Image (cartoon, rainbow, N blue to C red):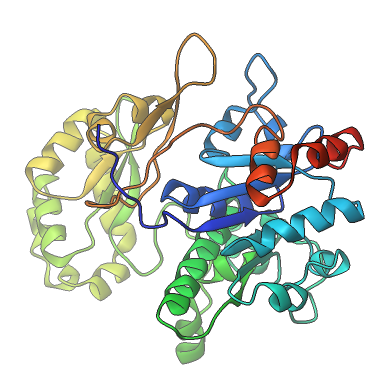
Length: 401
C-alpha cells in the first residue's frame, strides 16, 4: 500500500512540557507528518498518562490519543546533564514546544535568547496562561482560570445563575491549536526567506479571547455587554434547543430569513412565517419569546425523530444532541473516517479520534498510539543524535535518562 506524503514530513519537533496545551500542539504536528520527540521526566512521565479512565496497565486511554505518533524520550531536566541533552536535541530541531511557567526555560539555560545562538532557525513556541510579557506573565495559568479571564465564562450559562464551564479543558485545546497555527506560520515565513527562527508566544486567555466574535466592537461601538443567554445566542433568532415529547432535545437554527419562513410553515405557523414584523433578524429579536414559545409548543407535541424528519424535509438546519454513544454509531462519523483504530496490546483495538482538517492529497494519519513505556525511544533518539551506546548506558545508570 502506498503511503501518501504529509505536509510536515521532514520537520523535527521537540515537545517539552506536559498535560494538554503543549502536548496537543505536538499531536497536531505529529499527525500531519512532523517527527515529534517528547521529553518526559523519568519514572511516571507526563502526568496525563495517569488521568481519567485507565487501561488494565494503569495507562490513560486519553494518553494513547494525545501521545500518538510521538517518540518518548525520558530526561531528568533537573540535572545539568539532562539539560545538556535537551539542548542537543533542541539544536537538532526545527521547532520547540514548551508550556512551562514563564522563566523556567531561562532558569534552565534553554531560553530562546540562549538557543538562538546555536540554532537560529528554531521556531520556539511558548504556551502559558497569560503570555511571556505583561504584569501577569509570571502567574500560574490553568485553562479554567484563563477561560474566566478571557471573558468566555461570563457569557456562558443562564441569566441570574453562576457562569458555567464546558466539560472540557477548552482553553488548553484552543491554545494548542493556536500554537500549531503559529508554528506553521513561522515555518512558512522561514521557508520563504523572511528571516530564520522566531518565538511563537501563545497565551491561553488570548486563545479564548480570539473566539469571542463581535463582543469587543459591540462594546466599543455601542457599549453593549453580552451576558449569558442560556441555550440561545444573543441577537440571533431563532436558534435554540427545544424539548420533544419523547424527552429528547433537538437543536434548531432558523435564523436565516428564508429558513425562518420554512421553519414556521413546517411547524404549522404560516401567519408567523409571513409576519412582516418577523421578516428579518432584527424584527425576530424583538419577538424572540413569542417565536421560541411557538416552536417549543410544536416540538413538545411530537417525538424528536418526527421533528427532525419534518425539518429535514423543509431544509431547515436541525439536529439531535449527540453523546459519545451516538457519535460512535453514526453513519456520518463513520463515512468521514472520524475514528482510527490503534493496537495497545489488548484483545481488541482502541478507537481514538481522527484529527481534522481533511486534506485531499496529503492527509494526516495515526502511525502509532502514545508509547506505553516512558522513554521507550530514548536510546534510539540519542543514538541518532550521535551519542554512543556506552555514554547512553552511563546516563541511564545515573538516572539522567
